[in-house]
Image (cartoon, rainbow, N blue to C red):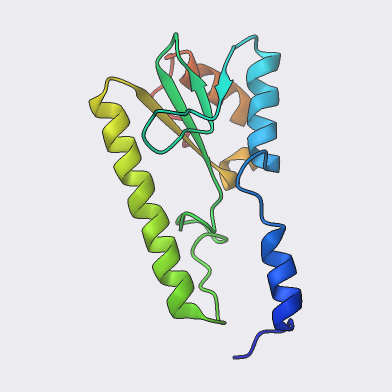
Length: 142
């Protein structure tokens, strides 16, 4: 199957894909701030550079896009039709890199919280996120 966009248009579309300050990230940060939970951004010096770091709580939080990290939801399990080999390999590399970062952080004594984009649509997401970050719940995932 051929791409519906010209190469120039496809390049422009892909340039607009952000690596930080994405809508899901901003939503998670708003929830944390509203709950009075302090955090830092970037995670420089930590494996995988977590999106949000709570140093005092020793919590590293990753906000994963379902497509980019190959989640098992409807959006994440969708296979690209154009240039499929490239995208499948890229998503596999993203998954492996994320798993290695989680393993390294946990080995260093950090508690890792992974938030999936699709989980954020659930009505009780904010309460579960806050409880997880505070250590009152096992995971954000339902």
